[in-house]
Image (cartoon, rainbow, N blue to C red):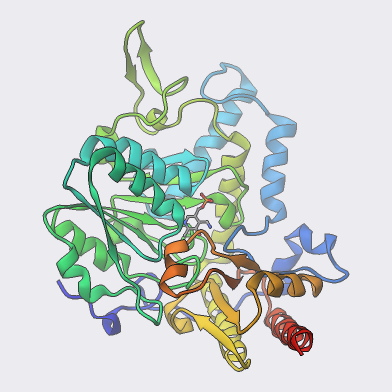
Length: 431
Ligand code: PMP
């Protein structure tokens, strides 16, 4: 199995569907996000959607409606408002299943976030299947939440972590994959899109290669599901994890998709109410999927809000969102690369989604973010929970601008102006 980088199709391994006639009506979209009205002087230029996206009114309304009209617990009450809450919660699960083309909605487990979804797999599937001497293959570009759970699993079991390296250009060194995937490899844990570099990894080809050595594959899709269409059956991954709060949904709800046979074989992660069939003094039997993995009262309003976010994104169209973001990324890449002393990390725009990460020579990214904040531009600065990647590039931190459906090209101009202002300020100070 050889994967040549040049043969890797861009964006989720489907041809990009950039149709200029479907370009987004951004001004109309921005009216859906009340936070822009709350910050109109100076206007909020929000370039941190990779950390958490903004929330449209329809999502807030859906959650309000739950609290105002039918707030109650689910799966328990034999009365009307509880039945309504249960129906809405389960409807949200169906919406998420359709959104990523899961065969059944019972393969969608609601968690708190991507981190919890990955930990669920690490503790439940991992403890039951990983033994001393086994290998877990990850990449150097993982977010800590798709690395630390595997380190902990390796420490519990005596398994070994192996790494796919990242090139200077910010793509995976896939020519090493043949040597890294062996009969010892039991799991490949890989991010679909790097939250730092924006790199889109060819997860479908990697999954095929992993399956050839009988390894399972978990995909961290926190930065892909919000930005372009995902089809879990096409990718054929065993698990896929993502967060509601990065896709216009509320905080506090995440998703784990899993193949049904695996989820059925796996022991529960958390024990308690809702996840049992029957309980005796010394032992219990467990509920069917998905309840087996949803112990206790879940984030009901949050799941319902996520369902509304899925409707919202589907109505606008993921293809159109993707095309819009590509336009902004390409523009940002072009004008930012003209700035003296800037280092842009990661591949060219067509191989990336969402985020643009950079450093300006002689200015700490935190100072940069501070100056930009003064201009009303919100960017992220730091290690982005990807310290091994920072070490790979020999930096402590970077600044990151990330884009979503509500961003405008003019906002990239404000970012550019802010960077020049920071440069002037800090060069003057040094003189
Ligand atoms: N993986 C990636 C690629 C991410 O960008 C993030 C969030 N920054 C996470 C995982 C963790 O997401 P959460 O904090 O919602 O668990």
